[in-house]
Amino acid sequence: MADKLHLRCAACGAINRIPAERLREGPKCGRCSGRLSAHPADVDDAALQRLIESSPVPVLVDFWAPWCGPCRQLAPHVEALALRHAGALIVVKLNTEEHQGFARALDVRGIPLLCVYKDGGLVRRQTGAVFGADLENVVAPYL
Image (cartoon, rainbow, N blue to C red; front, side, top):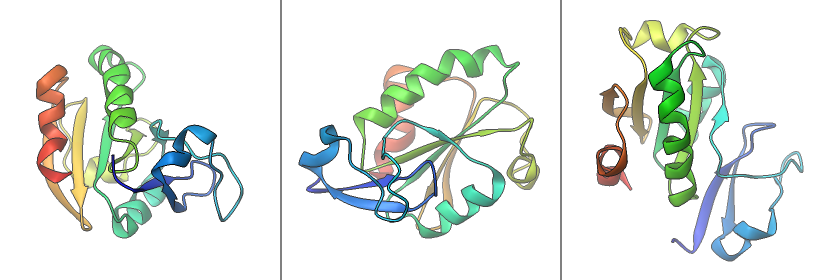
């Protein structure tokens, strides 16, 4: 684990840099005092755009919908991945039923869709539910 971790505040969207040893202490956001967590947060199109543009670490986006069975199967695995790479990777979820801007821009034809963004650009796109080592391989080259 890195000495400094980058965590996104689910309340205000600010990216906070904290010492690794403070992760288990329940750190708070420097902007709004909201509680910081490595768990994947739900975002809308505007919040996702801001995150992609400003994140100092790679961002994994899980495009999903509530009616999608494979999306629901994948969700706990994405959450575990987020916790394993806490601070080195920011993981968010975008509900394609409620927020269609990115889905349209990416010409999403199937979900679940996992996209990795680094330095403001899309670097990996993985359609379908992947588990275990295959899921880890989606983000490993960018960490």
